[in-house]
Length: 447
Ligand SMILES: Cc1cc2nc3c(=O)[nH]c(=O)nc-3n(C[C@H](O)[C@H](O)[C@H](O)COP(=O)(O)OP(=O)(O)OC[C@H]3O[C@@H](n4cnc5c(N)ncnc54)[C@H](O)[C@@H]3O)c2cc1C
Image (cartoon, rainbow, N blue to C red; front, side):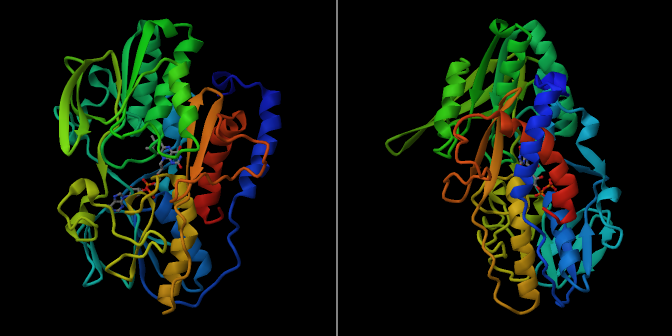
């Protein structure tokens, strides 16, 4: 891994010492806090949000009655998918067996939730078990809709050189294809999507990493790279936007705004896009057809279907892509059902869907849940903190951290660090610190 990142061992040790102390400086200590509150708590999803919260509640409640429901065999550190797709991590480095992550004294039902009845306080699982709860935590992450792209479904991922790192296998195929693309050259098309999606930075990162990879292979002049975003701007946190735009300009990667993917023809290696412009009060939609040699796309995403079907979303079940769980953006408590909390990617809150955001939500959700159980007013407030470390090349990261106001919010305590620029230290934090922080800090309720 060190060879791929261009860092020698001495430099690594120097930076790792700084990064280690830095990272743990920002780690919230699992405070001495405990409660006698009682009640049956059911948690849907044992990923970054659900398992981290279960770990906290297990410590904080004197007599925890916790049931985790999740069908997955493996716990993935998903931010590592970008690093698999660029050859920095090996696939085996980003996951652990779920049975080794879930504490033995927590009841784990290894099935998916298919329905929630928020009036009867009951969930139904894929095995038709009916589980009653007093308090419900909704944390099933995101559902990916490969087939919302015309002409595409999951079975076609990787065919016709159409790749996506929003999938574990997909990330591995991307790395194989990126190496091949740097040998053959050609046109590379990179896109995000029109729905909210996990880690808004990921589509930009893989584009920039491909560009740097081809420079390292001395084949940059053989590839022609284009980035398409469905948004009105490349990035919406003003502190970081100018530098990101400069990086794309310096690397000669044109950015196409307000353009979304409609369909992919993997056999013909063509991607169908739609550009939306507003002129006066008229919306003008222009279809675009692009031939590609290498495509990296982002699939549309929503909260899992049961959220919409149970009427737990803010769009009254009518708009699937807006079906995020309707919670208060500060307390994370459901707007209609005060015994339900949601956090992580499924929550309908106006911040970035990242595990960094989830990490900050966990103690707030946990303390507010306990306040509800105790019949007290929930007082903890989430400020929308999210971090999206945008990897700009093999060795540097633009450490984008912000809150609901889209103001910069820094974890770096050193005023001499200019976080509006890409930093080598941030790369070291990203590559070496955040994964252990996830598995050994966050998931264990310690960070
Ligand atoms: C390519 C990529 C790059 C990323 N980069 C970053 C990054 O750099 N920084 C960052 O902070 N974040 C990043 N993220 C985002 C981060 O991984 C997510 O924000 C985080 O995992 C969200 O946590 P979660 O618990 O909500 O969802 P997840 O961690 O996805 O967990 C959801 C869990 O719910 C389970 N589940 C799903 N449906 C059901 C159901 N019906 N019933 C029961 N269980 C269910 C799943 O099996 C899973 O275990 C990235 C993600 C990807 C894919």
